[in-house]
Length: 155
Image (cartoon, rainbow, N blue to C red; front, top):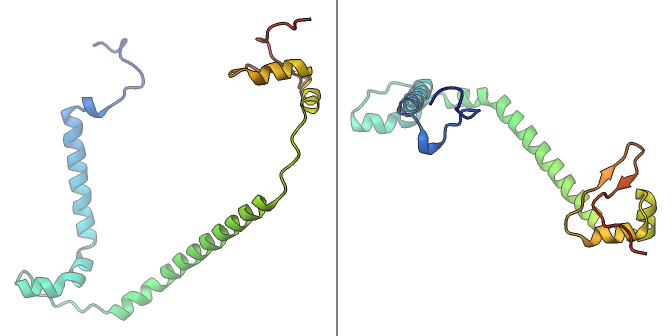
């Protein structure tokens, strides 16, 4: 297929994935997992050193310093707590505002004559438009409404 007849944009769907794209995705995934393991090597050793030493895989001589570790995490944990408290506060405020809105009195229904006057239509055209399932409404530059596909008035 030459380039002139190909659809644009070129879509890659799951039914037609080139083999090179599959290998590229696999390689990128494996590399990212490798980088993740390298970054967390010390943390894995801290958490699993007792079990790895028991199995004889490593000779762990790591001292965890848990108090120092948590002391370094305190600012981040405080930031998470502040964001969580803000989300909780504003979420509750939104729920309360919604409940108060439901307690308000329903407005009076808009009368046909008032709606026809506001839209610039006559009442019979508005009633005929409401009875149709699909209506095209055109808004003129002066803000008045026009319904072009209504049949002419029968007198």
